[in-house]
Image (tube, rainbow, N blue to C red):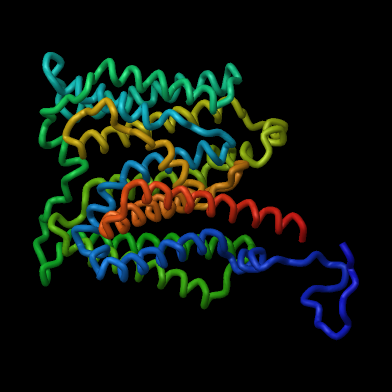
Length: 412
């Protein structure tokens, strides 16, 4: 690569210094350009479908339904992004959802007849055991995760058919409320807006502002680079406005805040902390970035791999409970293509195919992009076959964009 420069053109960097890409400059401002771009894409897609559907997309009940219908994708994407960051893949989660859903339904029905809360705990335990089973083969036997989870996809789909048959209905109404219900309106209404929803939104904004301010202070305390104060305020304002708009819309919906939205919100906060602020999370990124170097640095790669799959099984159990509650029955065919939805959400949300890169927040935004596409195209009465094709193109473009960025960065 030539270092000769045109004397008539001002050089942005000292002679001999490496060129800095636009993405690197944006990151130097303290943000992740790719993550901001993904969020911007979500906003553009929402506005586009809001116009195309004559305002129907953002009707209060449609927004509530968006979260209820796509909660399973968000839950699975949280676990899947951890798997992908570590350099693995899990093709079995859809079958595990069907299998665990069948177990939960069977334990609530006669002759076992467990209370629904106990059945939920059994389902979570079974999901974790499934994850431990697959994690053992990946971590300690050394079989590639692709093969182990491909086998698991067949095994647990077959077990779901054995346990469920076709459909097990007649589940308790309290269990069904997990997915179809909303938080009780204990504070009444203000101008037809659910006060509980407004309070939750205000608390969410306050928590995010406090977290961001504390993070900025921590960076300054350690003499690390922080973004310009104006940009920081703009970012906080954008987040607050976005949450505020969503809160107001949901407050007008028939039930207020969906229970599944609370479940997803708790999981997002917990796993964002796990991936960003704990030793285990840093080990996952280290393994995905360079497994050999991580091992030489003292990271127990086998133990981390094992617990990644245990966690994936646990979250598949949560998704199974949400899916079964929404259907009101255990269905042997449940979970079809769930693994593809979760993987697509992660890659659209910025996870790298080669591992080492990915965020929980990005996976959630990716899941929302998929959900908005589904709902918008359904409102427009687009044929399901074309809906599938469009989602496939979006996934392909997202991965291609990631690879092109890496190649461009490698040549500069």
